[in-house]
Length: 146
Image (tube, rainbow, N blue to C red):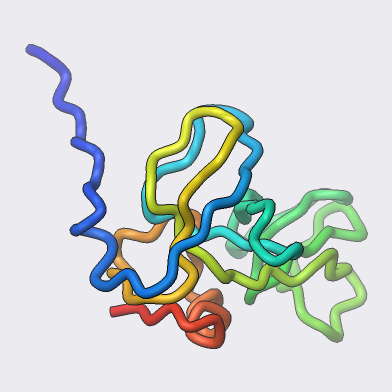
């Protein structure tokens, strides 16, 4: 029996309204990124990055394990760490906040120039590399989720 594969999404399935789009660079490691991937820039849109750390789930973490939780990347400071990363936790250190401020408008398989939505409306259920903690940052950056 042939393998059934999911077809890639098209722009109209992910993006409801494009108001402002910019072009910038992204570095690709691995298989690449898909249309609808949440990205961030720290240099005004010249270079874009994704949140690529695993999302925190309850469990045991070793020292130096990194996770994404509540809008930030955290690093475990000890082995067998069973606590949740928080600002007041002594077992985790916040590495950096992820200020989600863009959505990829294309599938990308190699390092280079990409189109990024920076103002508009998108369908939340189709976003990739997305965690609900990013919703506030996206809204602040004028990307509305439906």
